[in-house]
Structures are given as C-alpha cells and as structure tokens.
Length: 309
Image 1 (cartoon, rainbow, N blue to C red):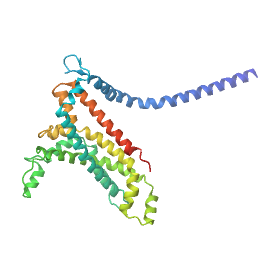
Image 2 (cartoon, rainbow, N blue to C red; image 1 turned 90 degrees about the vertical axis):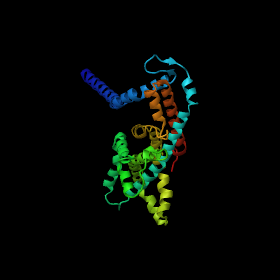
Image 3 (tube, helix red, strand yellow; image 1 turned 120 degrees about the vertical axis):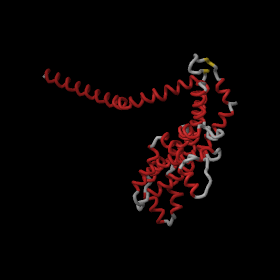
Image 4 (cartoon, rainbow, N blue to C red; image 1 turned 30 degrees about the horizontal axis):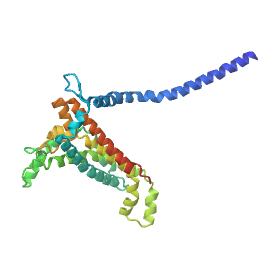
C-alpha cells in the first residue's frame, strides 16, 4: 500500500510538473517568435528615435563634441522661413496626392470586385506591381520619361505639334508631376485594401437594397461607403504618414527645385543633417515632423477611427 501511494504521489507530481512546463512554454514561445522583430524595432527604430530626441537639445556637427543648447533649436525653427515653406510644400503634396489616390483606388476596387469583370486577377496584379517596385527605380524611370530634351513624352508631344514641356523643371508643374507619381504608386496598395474591405461586406445588405429598389449610386452611398469607413481610415492614415515622408523622388528628380517648389520637410531635414552638418537642428525638425504626423493621426482617429455601423 505504501509503495502504491508513493507511485501515485510521484505520478501526480510528474503531471503537475509537466503541466507547468507546458504553461511556461506556451507563455515563452510567442515571445521567442517575436524576439527578432522586437530586436530589429529596438535597434533601428526605438534607439534612433530616443537618440534623435536627445540630440535635438544639442548643437552637434558630427565632428566636435555635442554642446547642450536647451530649446534653442526649437526656438530657431519657429522663425525659419524655409522650414515653414517646406511644411506648406509637404501639405500640398499630401492633400494633392491623397484625395485622387483614395478615389481612384476605391473606384478600381469596386469594378474589380464585380463577378462579371473579366481577367480580374491579372488586372489586380498589374495594378499592384508599382507598389513592390523601389521608389528609386520608379523615380529614375519617370525622370527619363519626362526629360525635357530626349524624353519619350516630349517626343510624342512634338509629333502632335505641341512645344516641349519642362515638366520637372517648371515650378508650376514639378509638384503636380510628383503627385502623379505618388498616386500611381499608391493605387495598387490602396486597391488591395479596399478589395478586402468590399469582400467583407455582407451581400444581404445589397440584396435587401435591390428589393427596396435602391439604385447603384444609393447602394454605394448608404451601404458601401459607410461600411468602408474603417478601411478608409487605414488608407488615409497610411497615405498621410507616407506623404509627409516624401523624399526619394524629390532627391532623385528635382533636388527640391525648381525655385524650391518641391522643397518638402524630409528633404530639408536631410540637407540640414548631411549637407550642412547641423545634426542637432535636423533632429529638432524630425521631432516636429513626428508631432505633426502624430496629431494628424489622432485627429483622424477621433473623427474616423471610432465610427461604428
């Protein structure tokens, strides 16, 4: 009897120990899988962000030791006309590219979501291709296409009897051209997101609307659009964040010109940091850009993200 009790006790303790091990492994396993991503975020996002925040209170040129200046960098940028101009240029790009990108991608998604539309999958893949292409490669291609001397577009215009256009060399056309590039590249990503949102809408809503005699426009306005507001919130938020960070195409195509018509805030930060070597001031500019994006995102969340249907 005593031996049997010892066996039962040891069996129970083994089961308890085994259960504890399983619970511990279940708790630890997710963190082990997330560890590489967390490490990358810490090294390449969190640490540089904290370093930039600290550096914004110093005068530092990358050569001499940092000199603490307090809030002087932030006080200076309030009177920096070029900073204010770069903000206006960036806002112009964001507003100019966001509205057509959302509208066009939603229209394409609605059409491609129809069962009767032929070759849907091929067209979806074609529209999505620009999203996965490097912006550097895209910028070089567009720069060649609209070259004022030997670009194919100007040759085509000349064959039709039109004079050559400067495009990226014209202060009035440079930013609209950059907006066209941004819209063209963003359509594919937005379209896929809208397609996912459209396929998540219950078809019974449309069946009930058809029974009530609602037109296609009424179905879109009273069913599709309200139910896509959470999707639109995501698309708009990503578009605003990406728009305020425009840099590659400006650096490659226009260099901030002509006449500073494409002088966006990130390009200004780059020049201050790596051309003028004012790393402290450029860090303060980066912090202001972060605050602007954060405030706009919070405003969007307040008026769009909490909408329930």
